Image (tube, rainbow, N blue to C red):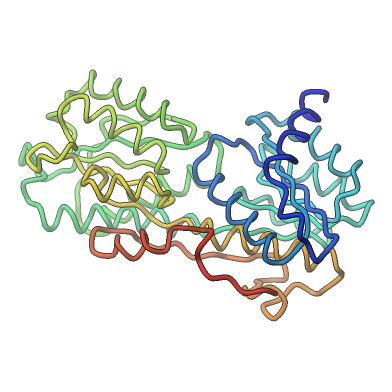
Length: 348
């Protein structure tokens, strides 16, 4: 508990919104880990949205530990926050609802979808996310287009795609669904596949590098024809391992197509350099903006609908943010719009 409170104090100093505020709304935000690139971009978006709407926001790092995050939720409630935003670890969304409901504190859940039955237990809880099936299909479709355009990518001419799969956190719905649907997209397009290796890298770049290095040692770089990664950080780790073998460094004859998900700034830079084939936008800008708007409006006692927050609300509980494919053809558009601070926003 002591460690969690010290973290809370530290992030209060770093991430509090501008002191020139027009509202006394106080939002406590639990992030499952700060060293996740996509969640960092959601935090940036939330901070900028809070500066515009007015109020105070605090972020805490759960360090991928459920007990730590539960302590942080308790700390926020003790401090008297007006709303909670949770990017949950394990079942901490359920824990947050259980603790917030008696205090009538709104809860906004982002990134990990809880059981729908849990959302029905409280009238002041909402979920913001994206349909994981879309991200899987779109990452697979990027590879479909590549292999249709590059017959030479079938290096051994056996009519199959020999691929590596890098998976996110075990048990996370995005891991399961992105893995399944990326493969489905390729099969639906008529490709035969051979999975050489699959392993869990927990969304992390360093683990992506380590796992890919192991696969290269086991199978040889010359026998791998594609890498499918559940997110960009792991994809970039895989690319570092490939670059150590002389691949994906600008020589088109030594290129293995790697796809990720999230469209983080480092991933877009890697695409610009020709290192990463493509990615899928997991819209941190709109996820962060929606989270802050819901928290503020719900804390003020407003109904949550498109008129009050600017986003469609499905079944009174869900705000779905669509994914978008990012390829070399539309890359420039995403790079120009990536700066979360400068992108235009509306006051709600």
